[in-house]
Image 1 (spheres, helix red, strand yellow):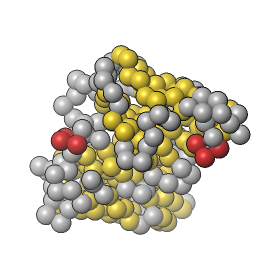
Image 2 (image 1 turned 45 degrees about the vertical axis):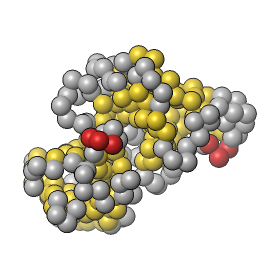
Image 3 (image 1 turned 120 degrees about the vertical axis):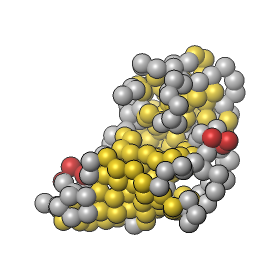
Image 4 (image 1 turned 180 degrees about the vertical axis):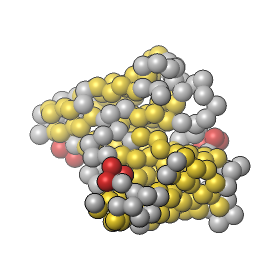
Length: 117
Length: 113
């Protein structure tokens, strides 16, 4: 099956710093990638849809200046948490949809656990 | 927007028994319904999916049923095994909404040996 690589898997940072998370589709092209946030024992909440070559579409309540998304190529999307604060600590997961598939299957990365001190 | 409700939130079954998880959705335009399994600290893995033009789909011990009229779909796991223990998420997606997935709240399944 398709593989999505997400890095880093774990980040611990000081309050006020920015953190960049990468999401790569390794063996397929993806014009669309998705970024989710997952709190402990809770569901996946869609933050934004990342579109290759255009601006990301953010869900209601998600600050676009806080969570910067860049989708510069068909295989890479990045999420930057700017000026991170303890309340940003969470598990962030990306997913990508295979262009070549007629199905709407989303393949997930392994997630990034962000801890802001 | 779409809203997906999932029940139960936790499910404990004896090994060998069946497990059933139910989801309802609100948007009648949704046309794709995947189920994901997530083990602790790991990525969600697609286990089965169904499209709105099909009422039922089966893959070995796993089956999914869809009732478009009632806007609900269910996951059935038969002959459960300890390795089935995980959190299961249902989701709904609609092409016109950019194919984004709206997830249910999840069901924590524990299969007791």
